[in-house]
Length: 205
Length: 205
DNA sequence: TGCGTTATAGAACACGGTGTTGACAAATTC
DNA sequence: GAATTTGTCAACACCGTGTTCTATAACGCA
Image (cartoon, rainbow over all chains, first blue to last red; front, top):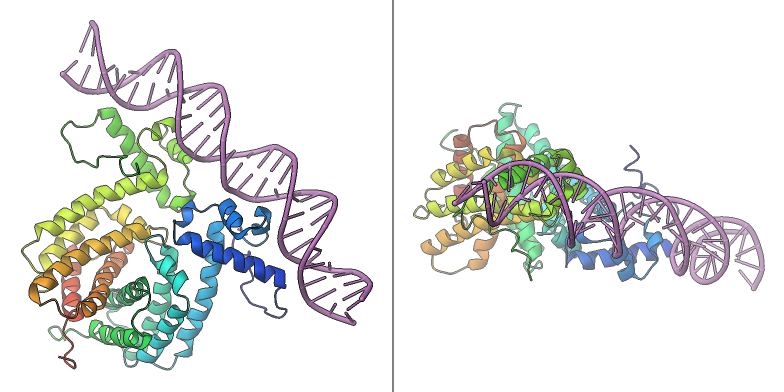
């Protein structure tokens, strides 16, 4: 029952965190990022994390329940920005004009490469993957509903599932190649591929 | 070094396993499948697995190193069939004619719904996801190379990353809805969406 | 600067799952 | 039926966990 109260996210940045707290969390995050490049979350213990960060094991428990909880909090922070980006493109429909939003998204991902690469890679987290999926999906559904009458919703689901996962595949491929293409090119590709995917099939229409 | 020797997969069904062994593995697999619907792999202990399967804890270690190892072996068995399906459609190109292969794949997934639903869901395994991705990708790359000169390989990668992940999105959406659509319809949708995605952009060509 | 406050270190603790081992009983194969 | 293999049961040391306590150091603020 008391499971999601571990942080108040950053609901109130009223008073900035104590410098020591920031330092501790930063060191832990660095250590986790490093370890995640070598092994899966399941194999990371609190002990080795704090050993690597060179701090007392008990300190970890001041902020996190366990390693998974820590990862979740990090993910939460990412999604806070992620959601805001999507929200800020409220006026543009994904179908008509997805490039600006995509550019913002790809740029944001580029800024958080290491973590995204790890979370979307083989040692990654399906929860993270799922959440990214849902954020984009919600945006798409909203745009779609504003365009058409609520008719064949089933058909929507599958075509959009394809396109949304397709975008994530694009992102996965990109970060795994260390974002070697410029973000704007990726945004253009995404835009093109989205438009093709959500096309009404000429043979049926 | 000695990490993947825990099973010989079923390289040699020469002598069928002892009936007791089959029984044990079956009971454990059932218990695991059941537990996976309730919680993530990370939260499943050998103890509760064997308790649920009503057998001695020590017995588990006769066949598996830990719960993750067990899951991996189950995945291996799935991929054995999966690979064979792809191989059996060696003559057909994904671009020209993907429906038959897709139908086989979707049918196979339907037969292994529970496990696929779990492995591709939020509590799932990125490793599994990644492997499915790679099997399809290898097939696509082969078909693609046989059609075109090895020119813009980079362009291939991203467009195909999109399409392949798109197919997995289709599969994920389908199993999460308990395969309520017939497999043949999904195969047709996949075929359509693939063809659109790998299209040469008319504006560029 | 010095104050009260807060975070971290360090050490100790019980707890529980782990992985392994031994001998014994049961089931299976041929 | 005899030989072999498998599963059971109990016991074991091991290690990470999560929590607690006190002492010390770092911090924010006036």
